[in-house]
Image (cartoon, rainbow, N blue to C red):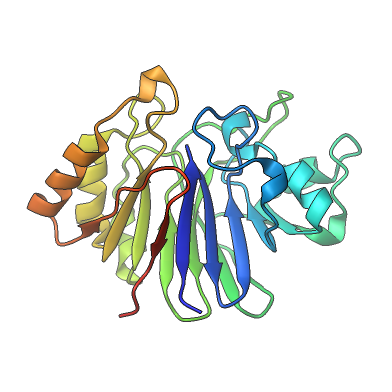
Amino acid sequence: MATRVRWLGHSALLVESEGRSVLIDPFLTGNPSAAVSADEVSPNLILISHGHGDHVGDAVAIAKRTGATVASNYEISLWLQEPQQGVPAEKVQGLQHGGSFLFDNAVRVKLTLAFHGSALPDGSNGGNPCGFVLTLPDGLRIYDAADTALFGDMALIGEAGIDLAILPIGDYYTMGPEDAVRAVKLLKPRFVLPIHYNTFPPITQDAAAWAERVKAETSAQPVVLQPGEWFTVEGR
């Protein structure tokens, strides 16, 4: 089964590869651009990039309903296990930047740097924000930068060989279109998908215009999706 990615709106993503389903930053309830409801997704693995409500989203409810494993930074992993959240400890993976774990002997998840905030919805310490590099069963690598500013070490992330980079372009809270083009130049991915834009007025952007710049200025192929659409990542 080919690796494919579905943009669910804002920063919520669903990655499917050889029978494994990975849900990232599942902000669905209350998301005006959400393509599905929280009850319509049944992932095996949930990833949370940082503590803000528009990224933690429905992670707890989905994890408790489906029995999915949840991976995030160590501080968020402790918060998930608190009585108020009640995610079982055996279903939580708490990592830190540069560390990785292998899920189901098939999907390797590595935490990367991200420059952002991470306070949890109840004000608790959400640790440091992160991005993710996923190595899928077919060998493809996906980098989800999540919420971040541009940073030079994206060039190091790109050295591993990124098949699909997923980058915020909304500006205001994250890097905007200009810096996202610069990020593509550092990462040198085969494909690039924009996220975290047009959900709310402060992050309104023209993704098509950004894609034209990517095509003109980089070697990457831009992929602009509407919420709910899929993209199949072609093998090398």
